[in-house]
Structures are given as C-alpha cells and as structure tokens.
Image (cartoon, rainbow, N blue to C red):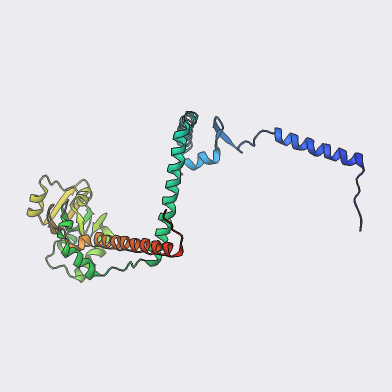
Length: 292
C-alpha cells in the first residue's frame, strides 16, 4: 500500500489554485450559442433554428430572401415579447401562471382520457346501428348543398376511342363487364376520370373538376343527364345518374361516416361519465376525498 502525502506548503498552493480556478469560473461569461444569426437582449436565434423555419427545396436567392424574412419576424417577436415582459405586473404574471397550470392540467386529463378511450371504447358500429340512427333523426340530415351520383371522363380530343368511351359511359345498362372495359379505356387514354357511380359527391366538387355552366343548379340537374362538353384540347363526358337538391333529406350512404362518428362520440361521452362516477366513488371509499 502506498500513501500520497502532501507537504503543508504544497497543499496550500493546491488550495490556492483551486480557489482561484473557482473564482475565475464564476467570472466567466455565459456560453454563447454555437452559431447565432441574430440577438435581441438575452435571446439568440441559432442558425439551426432558422433553417428549421425554411421550407425545403428553395433556390439560393429564394432561400436568402425567405431567411431574411424569418429573421426579421423572429426579431420583431422577441422585441415585443421582451418589452411585454418588462411591463408585466405581478397580478398579470400570477394570472399567466394560473392559466398555464390550468392548461397543463387539462392536457394531463385529455391524454389520460384518450388513453382510456383507446383501451375501453367499443369502436365497432354496425350498419344496423347506423341505419337506426338515420331513421330516428331525419332532421339532422337535411342537405346544405346539392349532391350527385356521377361518372365522368376527361379525354384529349385526339383520343382514338372517344366514341367507344362515350357509348359505354352513357349506356343505360352498364354492367360489370362494360364498366371494366370502360375503366381499361380510361386508364390508357383519359386525362381524368371518375367511374364510381354508387358514391354521392358534392355538386360543387364536380363543378371544380369539369367546365359545367350551371347558373340555376336545380334546373340544370333536373334537365340534364348525359352531357358532352368541349373545352380547349379536351372533351368531357359526364353522366349524371342521380341527384339530391339542397334542403332535401340526405341519402343514408352519404351520411354513414358522419353517423358513425356521432355514435362513437355518444359512446365516448357515456364512457367518460361512467368513469367519472366510478372514480368519485373509489376516491370517497378510500378516503381520498374529504369535505369540510
């Protein structure tokens, strides 16, 4: 065994150096950010943070211009923030702390409830439940916009199979075989197409896709079924299979998704109520809750 022995003078010198080092470290300035690009008071904007504010794929000039805008936005925000902090009175600061704590508590409860919901909520909704809700609440399903069942094809005017596509699309009896043939034509030649005639879509969405001029939409839908429109270098073929006008009762198939969400929200509300009751009973039984 060996012992390390310091003389009194040597130990004194080491203590002096140690105390001097501690004193120097206390006088050191705070460590600056690695690569700052702007500073407002004690706040620094680092280059890495600036880069995270920029969308990818910008050219050099665009990137520089965007970076300058982001820097000035950050500077303006920091100037206002630091001025606001300087003028914040004790009452306002206490109110801010209270609101932050309330928000934190709300988040904790929200994440707890979401965790319980994922674990305990029955998310299977049968077609019969959806239909029963639909029949029991018809006033909830009044249309606010016109809807249509439609098929359409957008073809270049140079298409060699335009007549065959038009004949199939406008057929009164479009069976599975004809629909398959039509989809094959469309995949090869169409610039755009929609062949799901069983699905209801907003008439507004159709108007954004095909150049239909419908000044009186109700009259247009009542008076048109098979429509051919030439516009630019394209030809549009539109087959309107069915329609519902605003203020009519919406069809069940159009509302299925919404009804399912309504049913799930009701279940979730009932589940949360039951859990609240159970938790209160458990807390009172265990003595966690006391009233004075």
